[in-house]
Structure formats: structure tokens, C-alpha cells
Length: 179
Image 1: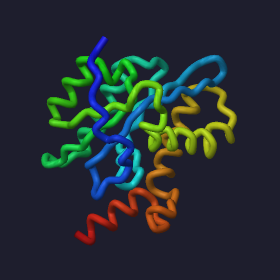
Image 2: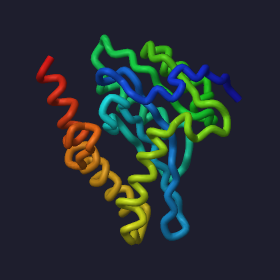
Image 3: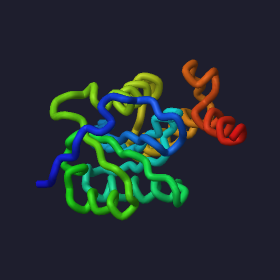
Image 4: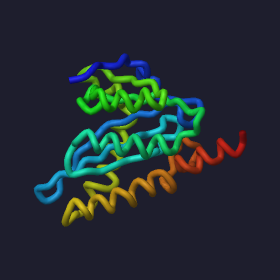
């Protein structure tokens, strides 16, 4: 299908500033016999979900739309490393072209190694434990609306001890205002 990228991130999940290291993956939800796929990108500086997209199908367009949203958040000088697993979306030539056009460095975990993308996998676990498994959904549309609310909460209100008791957005805002 496509080409593999080297594991540049190599489990170095800390970033000294915003938009230096990003991670991405896709997770699946099942509601009433239907599926919904979530494709987020997380900034390793503060754990913020920079952009995300949902779809009823795990097509390449899901990832492309998420990337365009993420790219819109970058300053012209930002060139983050973008790390993923070896899923077919991330090996696809069209995906690779988008990264080259934005001058982003692509990085991939080694095959069959979930620890190589632990930060985004941890987010998926938190999302499912704190939101998905605690709620009842009548449709994937209802879940989709709920995911919008949860990701807003996660970014703006959910505090983290490793961020000195701040939410990801508060932490980024405070760091940028002190520079």
C-alpha cells in the first residue's frame, strides 16, 4: 500500500513547547449496531486535542479532514513531528503528501507495539472510561455530539496533575503569556 516512516518519536512523549510533537490514531465506537470512528491529533506539550474528525467509515477522508483542521492551527513557523501507528491511512501516499506540503516530519511506531503510541492510546482509554462507558447512546449522531462536548471539556476544563492542576488549554495559554 504505502511506505513506512522511521520511529523518530521513539517513545519520547514530552515536548518543550506547543506544536513540536503531535500524535494521532483512530478509535472505533459501536452504538446500536452502527460504528463511529474518531481521528484526533494530540499535542504532546500539554495533551491538548488540537483537532479531530469523526465519521461512520474509517476512510482516508476522515484523516485528511482531521489534518486540515490541525494544519489550520499552526503558525507558519510551526513544523511538528506527527507520530502514528502503521495503519494504512498513515502509509497512504495522499497522507504523506499532505505532511510534505506542510513540512511536517512523519514518524511511525514499530509494528504491533501499542506502547509506541501510548499517549493517544491513553487518551482513548480515558475518553471511553470517563464518557463512553458511563453513558447510554441512542444513535451515533448522539454520540458524535457528546464527543464534541467531551473533547471541549477535556481540553478546557479537565485538569491534570502533570500540568500543575491546569487544563491543557490553560497550560498552553499560561506558557505562551509568560514568554
